[in-house]
Image 1 (cartoon, rainbow, N blue to C red):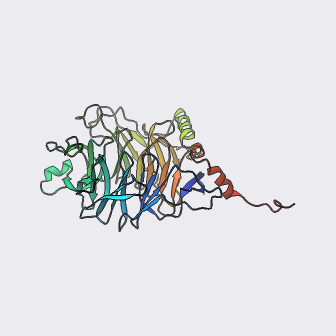
Image 2: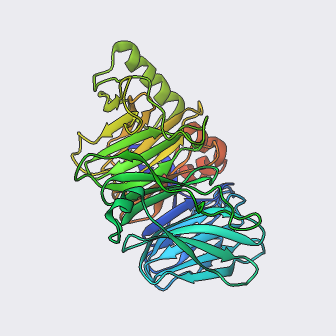
Length: 426
């Protein structure tokens, strides 16, 4: 992959993936490569860690591979933990599994879900079988059994949210899903605002997982009335659940890992929204300079922590978009250079909070707007922003760019070069 230097008024020159259509889905490979899905149904695979190639910087970047994955827009992409399999879903109703073991990607399995698929994720995989979950437009969460050896792939079962059970035959639609970091549980969000957890500890067969027949979904959290869940995200260590909701608020729920039967832990304390003190401001500036120098420290603290004695269905942190007054378009967990977990969200601008709720840094606006955001699964501190128009953009600390892309400075110098009138006079 050849990166092109891009001048931005908000940041030092950063590499971009130029010459590609608008991205509709993005996923980082566990070891750094990127899969980007587009509205035309294609999936482009980019080698994130290759050198920048041409010294002149005039060659446009080209993908490592192009998958003619679907007939219509790609809605979700997900890598397996080993990084050798890629799951893709589309509004054409198909979920497809791609093998990247050989020199060229090959199609391993296809399942027609019979409805528009809005999200899909890989749960558990072996050398022969893979378990995944697909979310359809009608609100059905389908567990999929994918045969990696060319055998039959099928829909194993339909999973319902916990708040669907009392309704009887009228199941409440699911609107978001995410697997735990160890693939031991599936988290589902319903249209009523409830977040359910389903155990996947009971094996369907040898080395396979599926919902335990005797276990019923349990409600972990409930949002306020008329508030709907838009996205669910899990932190890298699997201890935090990030919820993006329709009331312009991000909520972080701590997930207990000490006891399998314990749903959520009570949070340590409540801190109301406040302006940072002098010491807090200094700390925020130090964090910004260390981890995200291209951002500027924020003047307000948007975060709120929940007090002692709260019930287990309360969030430990709430982040409301009061500045822009708009819904968050996307969110994710990311790590600073100090390897501390942070929450990143994108609206009109790019925002970053620490887990105490302090808005430590932000970029006032993203060029061309932003639709998707993703962070590297490794500790390389890169953020990939897919704008509403134009090429995908990398955001990273300036120091990290110099270390990760040794040819970047040469490209910047070439882009800024202007010939002097007497430069070549003898």
